[in-house]
Amino acid sequence: MRKLLLVLALVMCLTGVAYAEKPVLMMATTTSTDNTGLLDVLAPEFTKDTGIELRWTAVGTGKALKMGENCDVDVLLVHAPAAEKKFVDAGFGAARTELMYNDFVIIGPASDPAGVKGMNVADALAKIAKQQAVFVSRGDNSGTHKKELSLWKTMGSAPEKEAWYVQTGQGMLQTIAVAAEKNGYTMTDRGTYIKYEASKNGNPELLVLVDGDKILFNQYSAMPVNPAHCPNVKKDLADKFVSWMAGAKAQKAIGDFKLLGKPLFTPNAQ
Image (cartoon, rainbow, N blue to C red; front, side, top):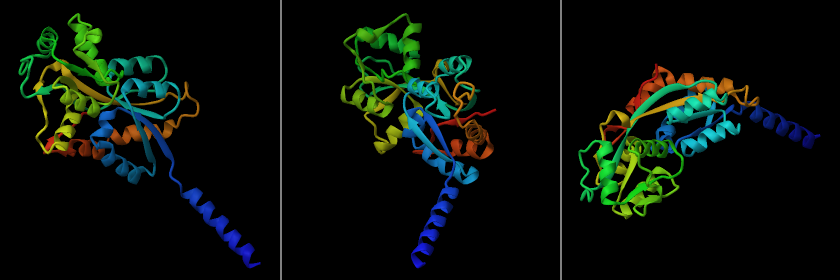
């Protein structure tokens, strides 16, 4: 009889644990929201306010969009507006909500072997190509890579087969490390650059040499995956996440998130 009571007590405890489990929201996001530590700040607050556990996979935006298309996640947080609009138009995404932004910058060694410091982005890339200075690209179909390719295309250039153009196929921090090792240039979002700068105690090998062009604006948006395309997607949880991210508390937390006293992202939800 005692053993039976113990078994019943154990079953009741396990049932209670099952009922206590939080609903889980699966997200695919760009590496910059993860590498910078922003999600580590936001996720616990989201869970505290909603009771929903946020789990994410950080990949390039191209891979994140593919995960949404394949119904592997419930929501996306990415930064390639043209690709995102195509995603929604194709019926894979339910909507698109702008949440925050930063900008892209071209970074390189203090010695600046191509002499591009202070130039606009088009002239800087043209001079890098002319000088055949090492340029390190992510080469991974991420939002940053898509933007970089669009800049070369605007100039009528396709450097992928050039010896001075190095493609890592890796994330941004790894790509910055390769550029530093090769005494070369690369393009990054400012948030990830500040994270890299902080990891070097404010004395990084690579410095911001080109910035400020309107064309370097970098918008981040969230999109629930469309249940019409993926019937099992947890759109109710995804909608709560997007609404929370666009709300006053999360927007303030995004604006307050700083390293070395510098904001990594600027909130701009409407």
